Image (tube, rainbow, N blue to C red; front, side):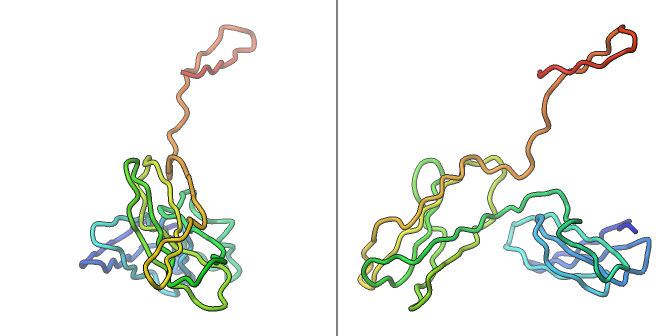
Length: 185
């Protein structure tokens, strides 16, 4: 069972993907940037992307109702990261400001409203650029607009979705039996 063709249609933020498979399914499993989206019974799915965004969409067809989509996930890393942090125990918090460092300065990239009684928060980053240095911090902000101390900082280093293949040279020897020797380039 294999997908033999992808037909992608985009209208603004709406992306429709229709696949041609060498079987009739009846199950079509979908991933976007390596993250599982779900299963459909038809070879078609619709996704929403931000203007200018691109994503890697993968579909697998199967007639196995017990298909393990985790074990069969495509080998690609998501283009986003999820930040998690515990609630701030200081004065009242109106919201948490998420900032990303672009290498020069901190820029606000998100806000998460504080909720009474909630102990754990999470936030999904915008699509990250492959090879870019990435650092985030989460800052509690009170009702008067005053910043608290950063709850947590994430220094993720260089964000790499598709690592470069190793660089090496291979040399065949004249030994008996012949061997191939590899050396880092």
